[in-house]
Length: 336
Image (cartoon, rainbow, N blue to C red; front, top):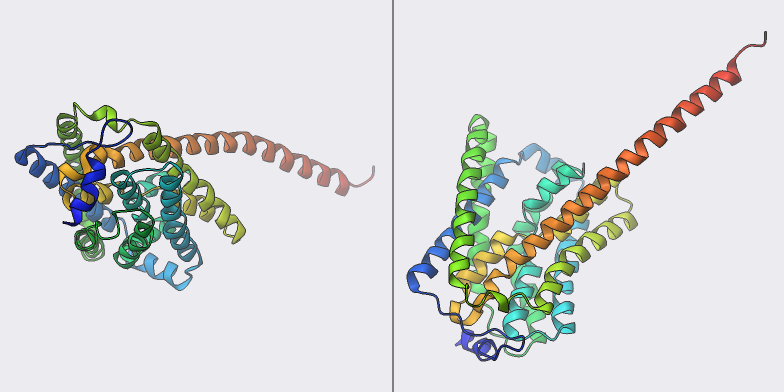
């Protein structure tokens, strides 16, 4: 009955609204299974990159982690809510955008933190802490923001979300324990996990294409594309600005920026696929994949800009240092 609350707005004409998506049960079960596999592999790989000693060191000085938590669960859900309201999205679109906005940070942020020469230890700790905090904050934030949309007050599958979040923590904890007690097996797990992740992702993309081949155009509307493009960009910008205001180091500022804009798309996809029937969510279960494309593209653009800035800055700094050295040498040179 909760799903029925938003089904009426999902079954509309094609003027910007979703229509019912009919997926055969075997295909739907296959999508659900591979979505869960992707989430499991992602989280156990994240756990394998963590070290308990580094977690403790950042928790003893939690300024960076605290700022990242505020930006992650403050800026992103508010951005999702504001964009959905401004673009006057219907209930199906709004709940999808809100779930994506309330998700914790994803492990993609660790890759771009490395590319941006940020603080890798802080990035990994932030990703883990946001996943743990999401267990309580994600349902709470969805409960608050869903009050602003008609039909969503009782339509969000909170039990399914809690189950998915709990499911993400278990493999993450397994990865941490494996890395702590059996570190020699960590590279093997990461390499094999990457292979399984790539294969599963290809299968999900293929099955999703088969499922929505006749309705794919419905997700490529101006409002959905605008949200997918603006949400990560706003997260990157505000994450950096708030970090600068709080006087974090430049490395930490870049790290918080990336952690804020990068969402756990695997978790969002799993919640949408498992938590909502296909006839209710329609092709909107592909929104996380669209967000993922823009998220990667914008983060890659920021990385290129940062690398170019470093290339320009380094020669100028080297010239300035050499000039200062020459001036000092002339000053101390004894008279003839």
